[in-house]
Amino acid sequence: MPVVEEPDHLSGGHPDGGAAASDQGTRGTQTAPVPDTGDPEIPAAVPLLAPAEGIPPVCRTPEDVAAAADRLAAGTGPLAVDAERASGFRYSSRAYLIQLRRVGAGTVLIDPIPVTDALEPLAAVINTLEWILHSADQDLPGLAELGLRPATLFDTELGGRLAGFPRVGLAAMVEQLLGRALRKGHGAADWSTRPLPEAWLNYAALDVELLPELRDAVAASLADQGKTEWAAQEFEHIRLAEPAAPKPDRWRRTSGIHTLRRARQLATVRELWTTRDALARSRDIAPSRILPDSAIVAAAGADPKSIGQLRELPVFGGPRQRRYSREWLGAIERARALPDDELPRMSQPYDGPPPVNRWERRDPVAAARLSRARAVMAELSEKVNIPVENLLSPDLVRRLCWDGLPDYGPGPEGAPEPAAAVEAFLEEHGARPWQRELTVGPLAAALPGSPAG
Figure 1 (cartoon, rainbow, N blue to C red):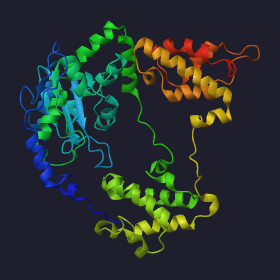
Figure 2: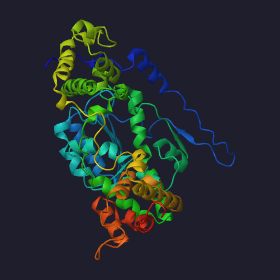
Figure 3: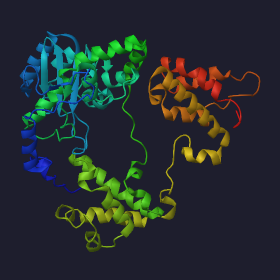
Figure 4: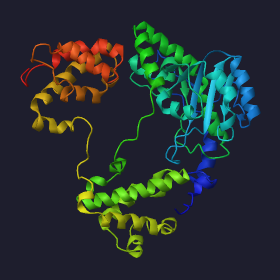
């Protein structure tokens, strides 16, 4: 397989070019605007511009990591954790910076790339602690790859959802609960860049600066509403969740694929997508930076027969793409040579119920069940002040209404009672006890019967 030349920014330059990097560094030192609450009775949030103890040095050696572990071991209480990745720039979801903070220990920044094999002292300390993360499911997999796993978990974003906060972004919750204005702006940066700009490190340290205080504020709100145990079950579910298996036919998510009308064109998309994915994985570069989706769809529609025709298409004629013309044309030729019985289906196969817009035609009784189920779930959501998608996964509700209970409703003697059948189905599909306690009764009452109820 040919070696793919890395995009310029992955060879040391900033993803937005030198001027953009310089501008970001300048903006990082300016005074943040103070949000206007619009209510004279509510004081404006106080801007948080820099960590209280300053930007800590980044740990880059085994000795640095060991010293940081000792500092954290001397602290008290749970551990605030965050990690920065390079989504959109790199193929992997590995962590390129780890931020840790504990009362009495301050903030620690770790560059895991040069110390991947030297994190045992850190793991020995922090793997015994409660971790505080915001949107934990985003960072836990990459940290687990490094041998870092929490003993218990508190997710401030998920806790905010269960507590009924209308906005659960970190900045919004910090402002609402702590009265501080947290600057955002570098979350989508290329964190694989080295060296990391000071403005980025300042941003990274601030992301954990107030997490311990935010955790306590969210916990208090949950306790006031009697939702502490509900949250604990959700946090444990996130902590123990296995990495999601790759979805089949991921190539079907290529942007613009809906414009193609023939199966052989879809085969071309599949071959180009697979070739791009292999190149991206081998170089740890985001696939879209190897070849954009728009170029894949254009090639599938044009069906070029030669390298010359391929290079006449947008993107393929660029200086970087011209070097890999043989690989792209080879993928197109493989699709062209496929026998008809090996071409992909025009419609995407699905595991489970069909798209909801087809229910009325295929099974009007199931469609009516889903309508009633959605209505009772919406009512319950408003009653307990929890988003409906956190009460139960919408996909799980659809499966329940479509064909999850073959013995449900009137049937032979010995068929399960409706509530017992719903309970068993939800438990089998991973619903937590608190979710089943709230939803089994309303769903069991809503599902039986014909479209007329």
